[in-house]
Amino acid sequence: MLRVLGSPISIFDDGARNTLSRRELLHAGGLAAAGLSLPQLLASRDAQAATAHSSGHGFGTAKRCLFLYLYGAPSQLETVDMKPEAPAEIRGTMRPIPSVLPGLDVCEHLPHMSKMMDRLTVVRSVTHAYPVHGVAFATTGIPAIEVAMELSPFDQRHHPYIGSVVEYFRRQQERGNPPTIPHNLALPFPFSSQRMGEVARAGPYASFLGSSYNPIFTEYSGKATRSVYKTLRDMKIDCFDPYVACDRESHFKLATTQPLPEVKLDRLDRRRTLLDQFDQKRRRLEDNSQSRALSRYQEMAFSLITSQKVSRALDVRSEPQSTRDLYGMTLFGQACLAGRRMLEAGTKLVSVFWDEYGLAGDAWDTHWNHYPRMLDQLLPPFDRAFSGLILDLEQRGMLDDTLVVCLSEHGRTPKINSAKGGGRDHWSRAYSAMFAGGGMARGRVIGATDKHASDPIDRPVGPKDLLATIYHALGINPHATLRDRGNREIPLVPESARVVPEMFG
Image (cartoon, rainbow, N blue to C red; front, side):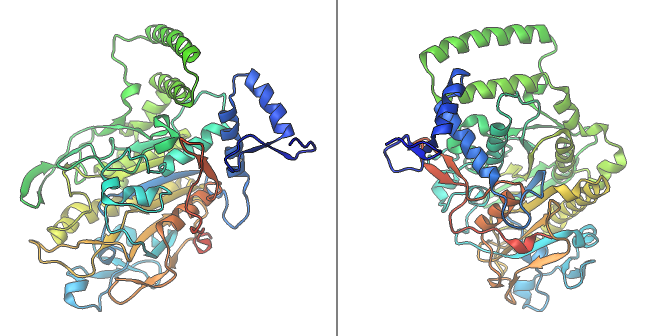
C-alpha cells in the first residue's frame, strides 16, 4: 500500500522497522544514480537518527574522546575506594592520603592524582554479574558475556567496539570525503599481541560492522629500560617492560605511514591505479556490502600511507622533554601523550590500552604479588600518566570538550588471597571508574560501596550505563541501532541501559 505526503513505504516484509517515506524513496533513486545503494541509504538514515537525538543534559558536550583501558582490572581498594577501617585482610598494607577533593581519599602511591581529583567524576558503584576479563562486555553493547566468547575475538555474537561505533557514525556524516585522519585509533600496539601464553582476547573489534571499522592500531618503537619479574602459575620470567620504563626514543607509528624508502609516491599512485582497475572488475562481479567496506578501507589505508599529519602526531619525540616527563617516560604515559596529539590532529576517539606485556595474566591482573606489583610496576606509572594527561589537556584549553574515560572490566576481591606476595582475584560486584572533561562534572563522586568495597550501597551503575553516558556525551543517541549481517536492528546498548545524568556538570 502506497501513501504519499510523507507516510512510510515498507520495503521489507519481516516486521522490521525498515521503512522509507515517499520523499526518501525518490531521494534514494537520485542517490542510486550517484552510486549510493539502498543499504548505504539506510545506514546514512540511521546515522542521522543517531545524531538527531538531542534531549537530556550533557548531550554532545564532548567533541572527542580519549578512552583509557586498564586491562586486567585495578583494585578499587588500592586506588579511589579505600577502606582503612576494614580488617587487615581486606584493607591491605597501603594507606589513604587526602586529595584536593574533600572526602575523597586516594592511595598513598597516587600523589600526583591526589592533587587533581577535583577535575574528575569518580563512579564508585560500577557493578555487573561477569567476573571474567570481559573487555568486550565493558566496551561494547553486548548484553552478556562468557569465557568462550571473551577468548574468541571474532565470535559472531559479538557487538562492535565503542570506537568502531563512533567511527561508523562519523563516516556516515562525512560520506564522500576520503578520510585524512583515522577516527578510531588505538595505542600502543595491536591488542593482546605482546605476551606469550593463552589465546587472543575479544573486545576492540568492529564485529558485524566489518573489519574496515576495526581500530587502526599503532606500533610501538622504543626500548624498555627496566627489567621486572613476572609470574603466571608455574611460569616465571624476567622481562624488560616498557610499561614500567622506556627510553627517550620511544614513539609510535602506523605500519602504513612508513613505506619502504624505495617506494616513491608516484609508484604508490601507480599501484593504486592498478588496484582500482582490479576493484572495478570485482565490483562488476560482486556488489555487496563487504566489497564496499573493503573499498572504503583501502581508500583510508592509501590516505594514511601518504599522511605526514598522522606520522608527525604519533612521533612524541618532537614534544619538549618537560611535557614527556609530565606524562612519565613509560609506555602508557607516552601513549597517552600520543593520544592527545592525535586528538589535536582531528581524531574523534583514541583508545590507549594498558595491555599485557611479556606474559599473559599480566597488566593489572594481580592474582600474584599484588602489593609488590602495585607499588613497583603499576601505581606510579599510572599516577604520572593520568594526572599528566588531565593537567596537559587543561593547560591547552582542551579539557572542556575532550572526554577522558578510564575504566576496566571489573575490580578485585575485597579479601586478599594466600598466593605468594598476596593477591586479589576477580570481583565484578563493585568497582570504580573515572571520567574527566567533555561535559563531565568536576569534583564529583557518584555511588558508594559497603565497608569492605564489596557491593554498592548507593547508586549502582552498570557498564552499559557508562557506555550510554559516553555515547550521549559524544552526541550519539545511545539507543540508536545498527544493522547486523542479517539486516536486523541492533541497539548500541541494551534497552535497560540509562545515561547517568549526575555525571554531567
